[in-house]
Image 1 (cartoon, rainbow, N blue to C red):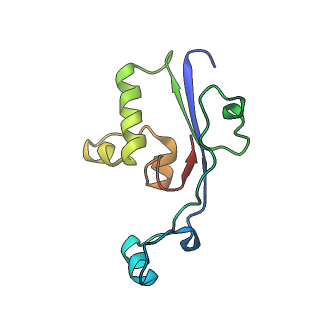
Image 2 (cartoon, rainbow, N blue to C red):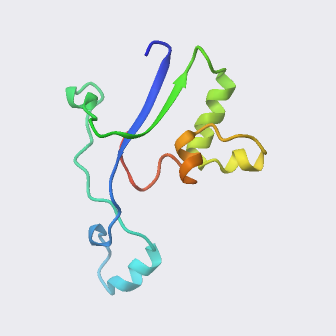
Length: 115
């Protein structure tokens, strides 16, 4: 697409078995964390690496189209992606992040593996 940016990501399942906890009683630490952990990742790639283009099962797609949206609209969409539509609710406006509005959480979170 000319004149736009497509944001997309790969996600991972959060599981307790993936957590690396300090020595001691694991149940105490897991109770403190209160959620599962993602796997260690081997997805760190330099931006010019050929494999950065390969995201066959990407999810959570959001489009920023410069021809149809104003800069202030794009900034509001980015804020909605960051805070999961919280600011849109407090400002009494429509959330501009489609995925965030459907799932009631930020676009970028603990499940994010690769953007």
